[in-house]
Image (cartoon, rainbow, N blue to C red; front, side, top):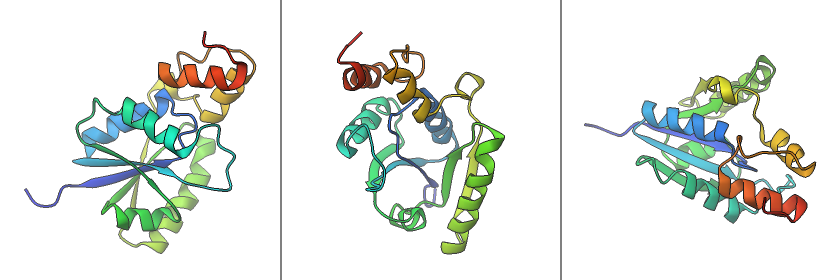
Length: 165
């Protein structure tokens, strides 16, 4: 069969959303192996620790037989080489995401000429979901249960409000 086609889907996943899982599920159908990698960015103030985010992803991705959950430091172009991936998957929610994502894709290709970027549009019910919005809704007591896996929702509620329901 030759070398399996591997893609890399990288992000902070803080928190993991159902929109991320939608992209992961569709990426699994396109590639033999999908590496979902949490960027360990020290400059970001994360709600969840790197270990928590990896745990959330592992639990949510158990149902996919071809997903590997990992973390990486540094440049995405280097992670692509480290994981022996041939493509990067990125989710695009809106036109406003495109300019930044295009710049990133072109820079990644400049750094690693073999790097191809595949843009996936979210399913309509997730087109407005972002980790930033989820954190804000939860912080002010809104219902986030339609937007994140339940274990993540519970941990977010505890973080912001001390409530579990």
